[in-house]
Length: 346
Image: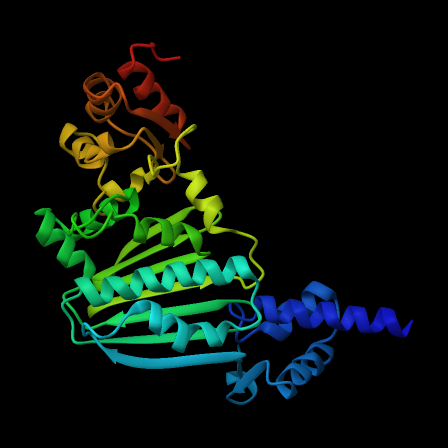
């Protein structure tokens, strides 16, 4: 009986920890409804977590807000200079915070941190880079902020793009770099797929990618943010490995980065419809560098005949070495694709 009580109490506290980020103000109500126990009983568990230093409490009564306290953390600012090396910063400042974490997660964190920190050192044209590494019971969150030109603005200028939002689309494809001699352009692409959540805030744009649902978001921000801020978040118990992510984007029989997944919704500006050939060409840019492209139509209800024709007839005729696979297409979009391929409408 005592063991059952202890096990139930453990389950309740684990539930509180897992859900506190999304329910900082109503975690007591949310937990009591889930387990069908009183709010007072839940608050006793919250108090235990607080006494153990796992939960912090701010405010009083109705304004009370709960948050998870980091188990360990490191916050530091360094100059952007030649003598600063990302591998040394990882070993000395970041790795100690993650002591005790499973090896595959350490591997992912090392990959993500060194890639993004190196980008700040070599491409931001900034003066300083601020880093925050926090290890919570339910997540590891790494934040890297530079005070440079801003990643979307830099890509727009270097690649002569019409709009900064176009830079987000190009980042999502991979193999994008403004320094082809020194970089492959794979760093941000693979980093965004390794972490549970990958976010970039720069200028007036916010870009977010989440795994494993592979959800994407791009939106304007009311306040303009100078430089670039990147957030990397992963569950410390994640079973994902770097090799799994690399393998997912390698075409059958190949060990290179030749398969990409492109969210078609990112090729839209605002709520515009995807109707024209010029919009399709914007989406198709650099597809010839891959062997297989997955076009994900999630969030897109319809496309125009010219848009579909440019992709599934014109481009494929000119680039027979590229295979285009479409997923999450509505019935209407499928009809347009079939027409472009000369397969009729059904």
